[in-house]
Image (tube, rainbow, N blue to C red):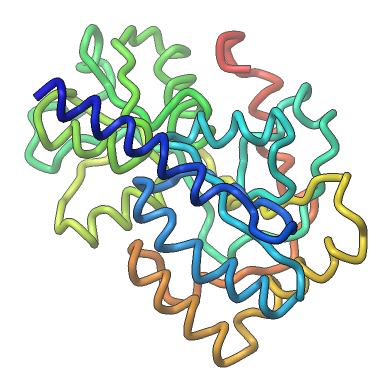
Length: 280
């Protein structure tokens, strides 16, 4: 069994750079791993292929095995475009990323959930128990719900699943008692896997993740890519791609991209002003 796991790990390490290296120049696009690596690629590859064709600016997908790995690419400036909400802390805002869009989606909430038939009905019952989260970089699904537990004095054992799907898989395998999550992703998982949840707690709302561009990308290229994303739903071909990819991951079929600005993410900045020091 151990040999098989090592072989799988080696395979993924080889596979990820193949997805992540731009061909014939161009720019790299790193979306946060909201799903497992295969589902993340299945959602984003058709979208960035369309954006590349429409804008005339080559984009290539670059994702790591976990959301933390992908964010590491961003922080080391290995990518030029992102779909992320990991860049609104005071320190990271100094890196010069610019918001240009987001998905037209209902607001996100951080949540703490258990299976619908769980005997756990309130947060206090999680004291001393293992609770899974996608990873240490997940803003909505880790920092927001874990801050709530810390503020209430509910000491738990933190387990990271690598992404939201991984955390939820541990829940239904009986390895953890609850999961911290993103309301959008939990709803999508419930649809795809025919699961039901009890929500123990939900946060105030936050906007969906931001499409952002590095300050080092020339304005002409940045604008071309932005317009391709933002007008995608107006083109029959682009609209079909959005419908198909959204259905794959359990999103509403009208989950298209709209203009956004830095001001749309003030609620994220407000969180960091009062968050427990370990989560800032």
